[in-house]
Image (tube, rainbow, N blue to C red; front, top):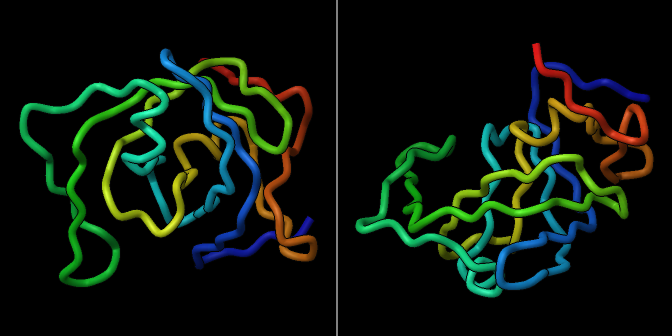
Length: 133
């Protein structure tokens, strides 16, 4: 396993999101520079999301860029064919470059890392477990 310090690393990987109204399978961006996970509104509509009364503005890491979070969705998550043991909340936004962005809120607790040589996300251990401390 190659470990890269001090820089964000991004790769694409297969995910399935299991919502209250349906399921979507997408190619997601796994981004170690993203602290939170997001889904585009087009996918969120198929899953059954909760729309906020008013969008919430968030700052992005790029100077002078902002995004509007229009809602949230709680879903089961399958990463590269491996189902995570609990559901997770994704922010819903419009205009994402990728339909799903997996951030560190999901990658860190399950020890999902980015294999630089193979260019894909991997688990340090399977089945993935979450440790409550």
